[in-house]
Image (cartoon, rainbow, N blue to C red; front, side, top):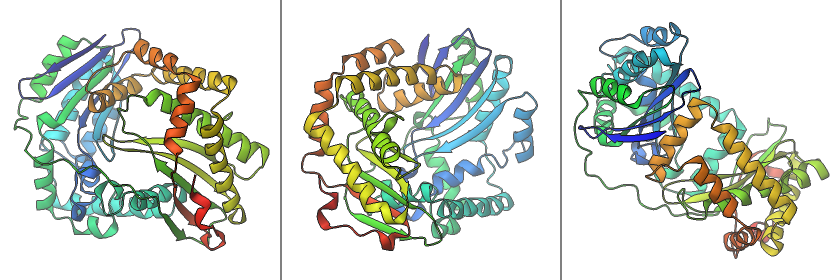
Length: 420
């Protein structure tokens, strides 16, 4: 059973009871991420996420780690472009300890100057690690070209220049503006009582106050389908990321889009996997994926191949997009994709952590909770004709953007090569 309650201070509490399990996953979600940062503060949300684990008024950094280890729990955090989350997974008997710890972290961080400088070095190493990981780097490279001169196109972790420049005063100011109750959700799934958890949360977050400041949200992004290359001649493979504009996260036809993506490159039986890997042996890793935000989205195709085969892989990928737009999927591949989507969805929701994340994302993007039965009904309502129509609409007259990392000197494309 899913229950939603808005507490007196404006904090939203969402719970889902799963009485057949012994664990609970609870998260504190912030409706803000890297796209809410001014460009000069790019990476500050991610840096603050790190710092909140480095000591509070009540706990040292080591005590924060020990408090979960001592009960066999797990604690972690993540920052995305549109939200930040701190979460813990514990046995149901330790739920109150998890609430107390998370509340302490997000309300009373110290921003200790010594810890701040130490963690700055950790984040800088993380940035350098991304630069050394081509299948991560290529997403930042693509985003910067696809959303040029916009915060949505900037790397979540920031840059060496921005992270090196943050002062303690800037960090504290941004934290106080962002971590307000009306920006926040407390979300839990597992073996729990909503009424009991609500009492615990009210007490733990009683000092959290302040209305959400009036500030303009980020403007709707402008998309640019250009080409960007980064030479890394030490790499044996050429990494490619193609993308074309798609739809926002709450798009009414999103389940048709999910099925289209599954057919194109979402499984081992998909068109891209079968054509590029199985039939031609041109790539070990090749797939398609959807990236959706509040106001825009993108369909992406990734492949890693020998530098001499880059142009051919791109041609084959575009051929599959054109084929879907021209003829639509076959009834057989549509049914396989539909059953795969239903099965993977149901399997993914067997854990308390995935249920918790699903609750939060639905609240953030849909502003309502959609039951599994309702979701399965929407998937069942998709038809071959709907997928075909969406494929035509998505590709008609479009040009794809491209990012390439590796021995890019060998990638030679004619101007029309990325035109559908």
